[in-house]
Length: 376
Image 1: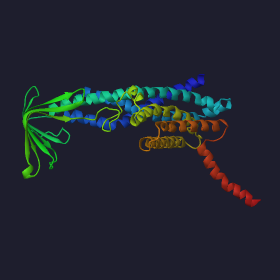
Image 2: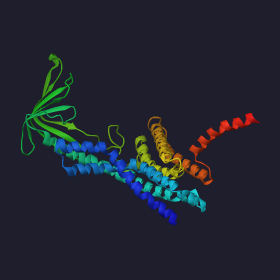
Image 3: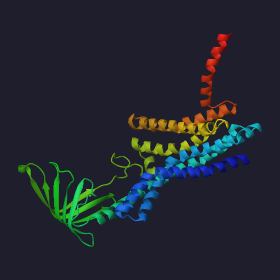
Image 4: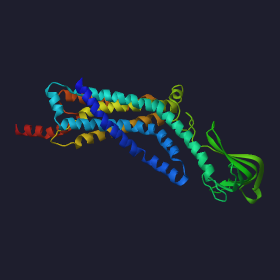
């Protein structure tokens, strides 16, 4: 009991440290873009901090399994190089008993990862989209300046003659960035930027204007209007449409939706966290090292295991997404890693080497067997 508690507690610090470092590395691109918003667009530090906070669950869902691998390798290498593993074996402690706290730690992190993927991640992504829309509306209004070309609207160029203190625009000119035969140029006396919260989009509301439709000289047309709306829609959070993001859909909504995309996203949220316990079990035998051979072998085996897992994961995802397999195949990667870990533990418990050492020793013994036959 005391041994299991000691091993469990020793896993906490390297796990937290690895999680922090990996999350920081993974978030660097997002941090760079958010710093750009502060410097170039004048977005408040508070809004940028909220955007980064809302993205953290997505980063943690990726880094937690990797942190388990690093923490397990670091601890197993230390126990091996200090000969504590061999001392435990000498007093009758089996590898099953040594692996028990790793398994319990993997279960705890799996529960934590499940809470992230099932609840925090979709809620964070939905909040991220809402905050991004609010910042977009605020900054779009701020960046529209009289007599200055504005390129903030996707595919459009905006120019205004004047801007009132209440954000009303006058002398509005808007056209496509690239003029073609299907392009149109719009001029309006007045305009205003509005946000539709329900539809989650920006609306450029124009009044009293004229639309010029491009074409040949004989087909050139103009259309006068009293009110006209340009709608600029960022990616929507919908479960079935191809142009939307399904990451922000609540898990309860996915559970009741039988579409292929919804079921795939649901199983991804359910299966990915189980890589934590699978890695924790597998790295107990793979983290063993011979003190005289150095520590690099354990880290290399951990890297190979992670690469192998993600190859399986991408293959299962491809089978579900493009080959119309049932989403249940997404359970295969964590289950295969888990069974591999149990098999390696079983081999080590019988005082045999893990599978990597078995393969290398088999390759070395074949020439010696042939030599014995030739001598006889």
